[in-house]
Amino acid sequence: MRLQASALGDLVRNAEYIYPILESVHILGIALLVGPAFTFDFRLLGVGHRVLSITTAARYLLPVSHVGLIVAAITGITLLSAQATVVADTGAAPWKLALLILAGLNALVFHYGVYRHVDRWTDAAVTPIAARVAAGVSMTAWTGVILAGRFLAYT
Image (cartoon, rainbow, N blue to C red; front, side, top):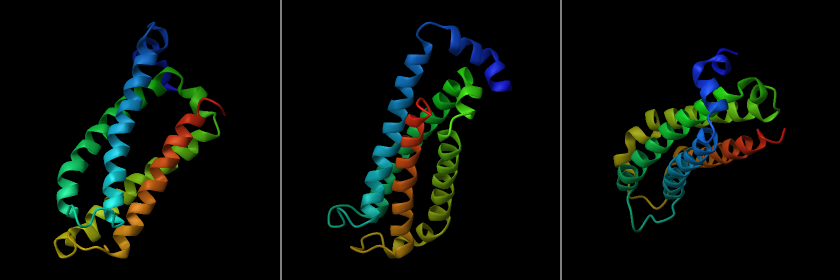
């Protein structure tokens, strides 16, 4: 695989502390991604509807989640470069990839679908069914991505 044979893959494999540092930063990126995303998803499911509008929640939570996504993606690809062929041969790899794709598609459908009309329901105690479904898919997909990521080391 080209990624594994790259200079980056060689560096990550052979530098003494790079891999564990990357893993640590990757976990922090996941926390920055999933923590705010789940908080936003819970708000879509009605939690805190008396405290915070959907648009206010989105304004403060989603940018942090986007930073986490960037950090997790960069470190994830960098970690993959060290042992791409090993990871590709695990049973968890196709699950992780599929769930990442599902999470991304779900976000696109949500933001270009029901969220375009958020001004109509931003303060609603009960959000539209499409928003609640998107929240459930998001939480399920990201939980699956994390589980599959952990199983990469054991399958």
